[in-house]
Amino acid sequence: MLVEQIAVFLENKSGRLAEITAILAENSINIRALSVADTADFGILRLIVDKVEMAKSVLRENGFTVGKTLVVAVEVEDKTGGLARVLKCIKDAGINVEYMYAFVNKTGENAVLIFRFEKMDEAIATLQKEGFTILSREQICSL
Amino acid sequence: METLPRVGLESIQLRRLQHLVTRVYKKVEPYRRKMEAVGVRPEDIKSLADLAKLPFTIKDDLRDNYPFGLFAVPLEEVVRVHASSGTTGKPTVVGYTAKDIETWAGVMARALCCAGATKGDMIHNAYGYGLFTGGLGAHYGIEKLGATAIPVSGGNSKRQINIMKDFGPTVLLSTPSYALNLADAMDSMKIDPKSLSLRVGIFGAEPWSESMREEVERKLNLKATDIYGLSEVMGPGVAQECLMTDRGMHICEDHFLPEIIDPDTGAVLPPGEKGELVFTTLTKEAFPIIRYRTKDISRLIYEPCECGRTLVRMEKVTGRTDDMLIIRGVNVFPSQVEHVLVGIEGVEPHYLIVVEREGNLDTMQVQVEVSEGIFSDEIRVLENLSKHIQKEIKDLLGVTCKVKLVEPKTIQRSEGKAQRVIDKRKI
Image (cartoon, rainbow over all chains, first blue to last red):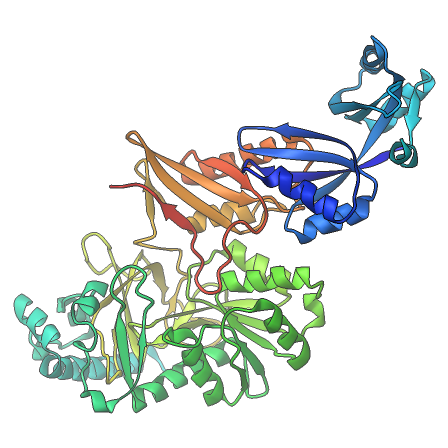
């Protein structure tokens, strides 16, 4: 039910992002989704990739600090209000969103929302009860 | 000698001191001139307390007389020289006669014994060999003891660890920062320190904190002891911690006479007070030194030690009078910052302090590496960590600093003495 996301610590220095993506490319690792959170001093790159363990170890070998977190991927129709409906249900359950990002799949029909919630299990239960589609890692990678 | 009653020891010290002052007065012109300038003659030294009448020697005296001006024997008697790196100016040069080398090996062998090493040990000596006194100084002590020396010197951590794995040394000699560097390398080579035979480490040549000791002990699975020495006085082996206490290193007082002074006034402080450590050599032939100001901050502990040695102990050096930073009027020692960092779960003791002046205000930035132990994919968690470090430093030092989280291994690792401070202020 949960999807593995890798996170990489980035100092605010030019070229770091380019370096990471080059390392992933050299190892034929495909990025399915990504987001960068940044402050004045540092950033955190969050990635969903097809080969999680491999991505982790190649980045580590290249001296990056890498972490692995579990996130939830929710599929919604790519229509006005799609995200709003998910967030309303989460808000009503009193759950906080730590962070989120989204991408639209190839067909352009559906959008995939990636969430990290404060209370992951509770959030999943709530979303399932409300009938939202939660994607597995395999499903994400095959999109 | 190490367990002699103090009265006996002091009478030996006085006799040796009188002999030294007489000899230096006769043979070394710069010393004679300095003594004449304050009106002291060798016969004025009637008790150990009269030592205070003699002028201090400072690093600049060594530089002014570069290279051999302070030698007390003709060069043909000198069998070896060592020199400092000269990073802060002209290098300082010291010399040894054959007897000096013998004395040095003796005090170094004592230091090894003091840390529990015996003839049966194999000793991995990762102090740098060369002009630096660390490598060769320790080496001769190891051979004097009859133990087996691995003269691996500094650098090439991977090879060092393979040697540890294959040869099975039981004692490690290195700087504390290099010991941590080795621990890092073991980690990346996936070698468990428990699978090695190391039992005790003898670490010195730079100030290190108690918390760094714990870190080294945990990461290398050995007992970490502190050694003290400096080339101007001899080299490693001037003082060494015994296994009974982690409070202070026994000074080889029959060869090196310590004093603690107020670094500002130069006044000798009463026993037990903290101040700048000053040494006078009692037996050295080629390069005797009188009242050398080490710039190291310590205190002398005269209480008897459980181990039975009567030799006075010097407390772990907590800082240097010259690496003390004054930031907005507050005295800051890098070792205090280190103490804070090591106390925070998951934080690596690799850090860099950058001091700058913006307008008229000093700013201190502490760079800390983000290891996987503290990394989070949430900004909030990392920002809280920065704030936490900032608060701990503020609480201990009374100085507000900026904490900058940096990528791992971006702070330079030392292969010898670690550089912890970059002071960009132009004062």
